[in-house]
Image (cartoon, rainbow, N blue to C red; front, side, top):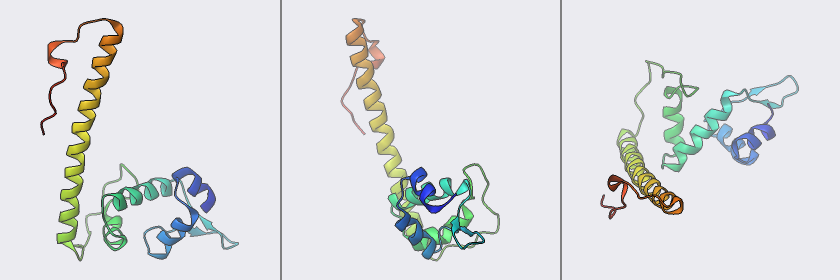
Length: 138
């Protein structure tokens, strides 16, 4: 697929995709006419890059660890991955990711309880005691 199609499928601008190529975190193939081409795995790769950026990794960190994360979601990482230059930075980012996951899970549970409460209210059925909303205590 061409860069425009990859942009459409991922929601990432072509300009940003070119930047990812420039910093070495996305590698297209070149067709005979010199156009960039991307296979289907590039979609997952771009989404993975976006997620890593969203949790605070720098493009430098991503360039170091990306080859060790596997090219596809279910692909195991290579066994010969070198240590990243900024292990402390990666550890901090991992801690941030875990903290965000905890917050997201708490919010998920709170929203589920809220929706169940209103669904029961709209249906006119009593809510089971174990589903009654409580103060959200972390």
